[in-house]
Length: 416
Ligand SMILES: [Zn+2]
Image (tube, rainbow, N blue to C red; front, top):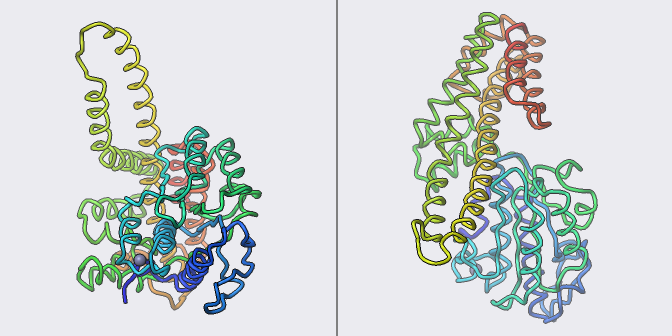
């Protein structure tokens, strides 16, 4: 039977953990005991005389979902939130609790998606405040924080306070790439239960594209492999010809690197493609927001108090522009990172070919080119190139200017 966990691809272990926790949470509600009496790392709960609850399955107030991009961190968090709000306590997918949570309209489920590069302390404080209120639906107040690695230090501290002394019916679900201290502070980590997600296998991704999105099996199989476990990316590749064109351009890079000039040209092309992709992704939202703000401010007013209103409006417009700029920067980084992941896949294919490793190629459509590379570069040269791409990703992550990092990478790829 399909339920809220069905779309969590290739994550059997995590799903099992979450199902048991949801059952335990439902037992807490039935027993009428405040969840505050439950031991964070899974102390037993009084199931009110019903079936015994596995001690390790205990409900707790704070969770961290980790895993590589596209593995379904936020899908898992949302599914778990639905199971907590489910009238059957299972995440049936049918009841109003499940339905409103999955469509993002449940009154007691708040989703925080940072649009910029960080979540501000102001945002976090107001969120924590609202999360402390009694759940209107009588079950749980759930706060989902996507990209918890983008919390500012101050915002992290505000969140930590709430996690340390949680209101009895409040649950925090954090999503982050990993529990590395760079992503999530050690103190927050120590108070959360961890749900690690793995990179779903290409076949599992292909299967969901066929089943849920009605994509032809051969296209789904290709996209599942090319997206390297990123479900959303696989769907885009299968459906969006523009996304396929951008990928083709990235995979053409290796054979274009014929000299220093060509390396710099390739760097420029990669950066500009990422900028164009990002601009296309945010332009609609930007315009809609600006129009909405102008309407709200009653643009063109003249009567008494108009001067003051205009001064206030200028401030709000500036604030909006700042937010939009920060979102654009993030979209550019995400687009560039996708390109680098594709490129890394190419050199990985060259390496596995050189090693005669019995694994399927990432990019079936450039497998012949990767094989030619393998012959020319051997395993060592292929590995050095793969490492150059990964070093570029790490440098950008560490805030090196993208153009500088990409130029260094292209030169390294050319020289070998
Ligand atoms: Zn339900």
